[in-house]
Length: 200
Image 1 (cartoon, one colour):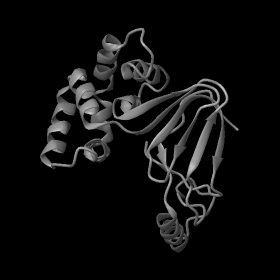
Image 2 (cartoon, one colour; image 1 turned 180 degrees about the horizontal axis):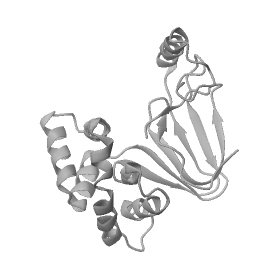
Image 3 (cartoon, rainbow, N blue to C red; image 1 turned 45 degrees about the horizontal axis):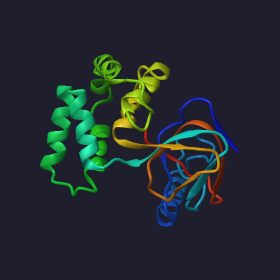
């Protein structure tokens, strides 16, 4: 049973091959199993299903290229415009664009990104409205900014899909799907593993 009173971290789970290699690598490095720096607690993959028991909101998987481009162009901040152009020059496929954009974002200096957050929050405030979170991701970004004002992951709704579940609905997450549970209570069913790779 999982109840997200506040948004949980952005994370991804490994497949079986990644888990075996990662577990062996961290054992070889003598990282204790209970160390915070430890990512691989076992050799197992970790697919999971979240069954909503209450209205449940999650971020799940990268958005389509045109959506990511639209939302960041609407934000209209030079830093992100330049990052988009950098990603376009790398010529990723349509399906890989947003993942490549996110990878480039992670490679930027965290201090540089955080220095933009006040400007981002001001723009997000202007772009928010009364529509649902899935209809306007700036509404969720504004909510995240109120809870985590110094965290660049407040922009996650602009590059990750927003999923809103009604009680009885579920989402399935295979290995490699970036996700974060935002709010709600649900029943989480997963493989026998505690492997979590945090992306924020």
